Structure formats: C-alpha cells, structure tokens
Image 1: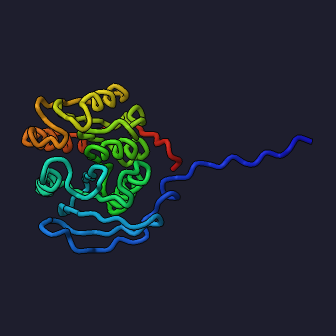
Image 2: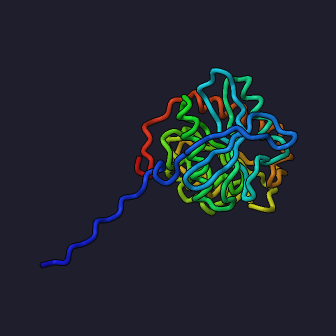
Image 3: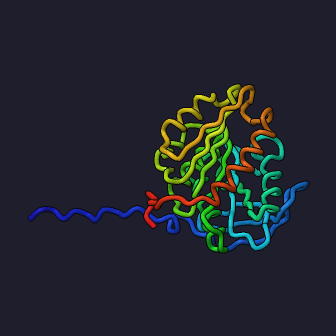
Length: 242
C-alpha cells in the first residue's frame, strides 16, 4: 500500500497569526498630541497614538521607517496631517512597531491596527508608510480586505514584492529625486510592479525625508487620502486566508 502522506498545513489567517487581547490607554510621548494606546497582542505589545475625530467612520493609519516611532518623514508631517484630518471627519492612528525593521512582523502590527479600526466601526482605511514603512504598507495592503488605499513615501523595494497584488486598491508612490538613502529608482520600480489604479509623484530636489517638498506633499496627501476613502473600489481578494 502507498505510504500515507501527511495533510498539507493550511495557511494561517491574519487573526490566527496575530490577535489583539487588550487595548489600554497610556501616556503620550512628551510634546505629542492625541490619545496614547498600547495594543497587547498574542505576539507582544506595541504602542500607538490615536487622533480621534468625533462620529467618524473613516480612518488612516501611519507607520514610520526602520527605527519605528511616530515621527514619519519630515518633522511633524504625520502629526500635522492627523490633526488636520480630525477636523475633516477622519480619524488617524499613528503606529509604532514591536520589532522594527522586520517587514513581516511590522505588517502584522499594521494589520492589527486595521482590525482595531474595523472593530470600532470604521470603513476600509488608507495606510501610509515612509521608507521601510513603504514596504510595510504594501505588504499589509495586499493582505487585507479592509484597506482601500496604500501610500508609500520614499519606499524601499525590499519587502515590497507584493506591489502587484495591491490592486484594486489605489496605490500612491512618492519619492524625492535627490534621495541619497533610497534612490528614486526604488519608487519607480515599485510603481512599475504595481497594477492600476496607481500614481507616481516625484519631487525635484527632495531628499529622503521629503522636507524640501513638505508643503506640496501635505497638500497632496490632504487631497488624495480623503478622495480615496470616499471612492468605490472593486472586489478585493486577500492572499492570506480569511
């Protein structure tokens, strides 16, 4: 008789990989605004800052580079945009990582943040990441049916191989043409890998942190994100089993 083959292990769902056990209120980092939160999960704890807009059902999640934290690209961009959006009826969640510089684990942190907003009544969200975080939002965006838009700012290519699976979610790639840390060819490559709908914005003279184009960038995000949150998208099939 032929030898019995072991059953092939089924891929785990996002909820099986990471689940939120508790969310508690914590003190904010000095000088910051918003509501400090600590997410306690089956894989460890991470912190976040919530900028709550009263009665909102639209949300944005912001993640940073390989060192984690809450800063974002240029000084204060994430915090300014988050506060601006609260006045526009959009809630923001700025997320730190458990294990910075690990794309897989950081993508799980982001997906936990998405699950939190979904569980508290928010419609599909937009996710924004800078540098290393650009790969994180692409990986998470390709694996969640509750994400409808992905913004990659000065993104790295490592970990961004699922760019072609972000569609039908909208993808915005932004890069500075004077970036000496991650050449703008990285953003171009990610854009080329992606399918429509997608958009590539390159800023002349802007370095990695995009400080030189801060006003233009914030104007772009202030328009693109609300438009994406309001737009209809086609059916989404997430690669990770639901």
